Image (cartoon, rainbow, N blue to C red; front, side):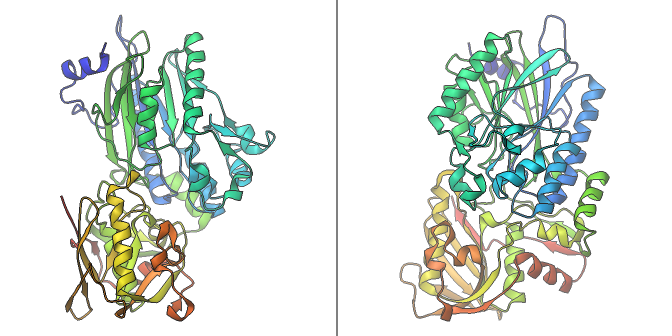
Length: 521
């Protein structure tokens, strides 16, 4: 029977009720009725320290709301809390899990931007349960192997038991900077992972545990596959593909298992910009009969004082550089839309380093900055990879090829690597990723048409972009430069340039997109 669909039509029309976000359903138990649970969730925070501080406040408010209504609450994370190899920042990310009261966390690929040994040491004393069912450890005595639970964690709330399982991306090896960071750790493939999940869930059901939540850092497409191939999983708290999934929609995040039971999938986007609260009701068979999926912006919450002081104690107090009075909202999918912060930062690079154009790959951005005072750390958190910048001679043909290559992102799985964010250029593409028009704008306001079908390989521009692009990352071989084409190497990333740029602006300042990228639907 299509149990959940029945309730969505009769009890919840539309699926998301206008109950305030973070407000759990009343009471845990109702006589002869259902079991009620709220799940606070996050994924792919990517080391955004300012966002972590606000997320702690949001998680604490969820607990206050749950206590006030007598509802049970689980707080879960689906991976990539960390990013980059900075040991201090990764230590803070580990402390975030404790301060937010996260019950369980599935490791993501960016947890391995540091070595497995360092990751194990940072998580060794964490109160958060670390999950990884499909990980294989060559050294069972390592700190990480001892910490990671490769079966099920059982959380008991008001006498009700919930089984929590975690899985990692099956493409983990190809999604980290250095394979040696894994220290020989491997991940089971997609088919084997599904088999193991079914076996684990079957064992839980034999033990009488019929409410199962999967923490998955595997991406939306695979999570949808798991939902339809594994029976007995009720909820998948997802991540890795950076989707922002709002509400409950059949065919997007509501699916049915082989035995006909509903499965809800969540993802809260990327970079800690959002979090979610999933309010659920289970019947006595452990089937979800009601679901309300609320997603809210993290910037709606104030920074948590303890988390902020923890960050300052680890990294030092960050200097204030300006005051942000307005910012256009980030697009729902920053990989395939113009990003207001990308416009701002690209303009900073172009102006501060005196170039004709600036290029930034969309995936290089990790978050945004909230309104009010802005510190150097706020800006640096947007660029955790610490890539160095280059000013180069770039001919028109290679420029066009790079924009065309990135435009094909529109039709790629998970929309990676992302369209090219630019300064000094305007371009138009269609929804199929075809480059239709391209114009160069000089600093005097003159506009020059560039023929995208027959670009001039003898026409050169001075261009600023980072070492990821100059090394041909994401198959952008056309952006590699010979030594004689490199005008200047800089020993800093885009954050320093942006910080210096903000200091030159009249305060308070604004961040707005100007439609320099047009996508025809």
